[in-house]
Image (tube, rainbow, N blue to C red; front, top):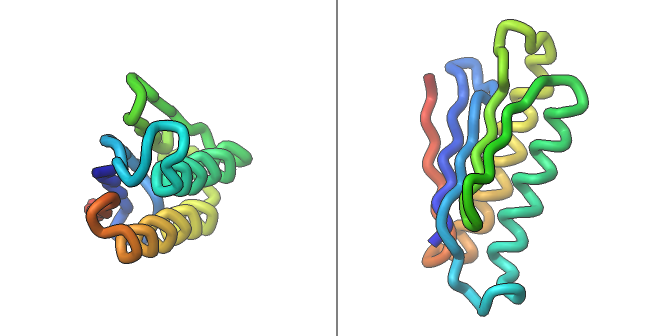
Length: 109
């Protein structure tokens, strides 16, 4: 199962996201659930990187973590809120359709 943890500020703005595990919906290279999660999270990173410094870690296959490097520099709060909404909506939709393969947890700080 892929477990996604989304951490947001009290105002709903994105702070960090980690994803770990394998969907195990299909064999490696043909897993549509894994591909969907990867596409959502990679798109979120690309959107953030357009105006905000993002630190990304991929320590091993099946693990991805990214966070806003310096929240004090991030004056684009709207982009942070929209990114959190994008991740939340996309992963939630996948977890509803594939509950045995994807789980979303969210923390507010």
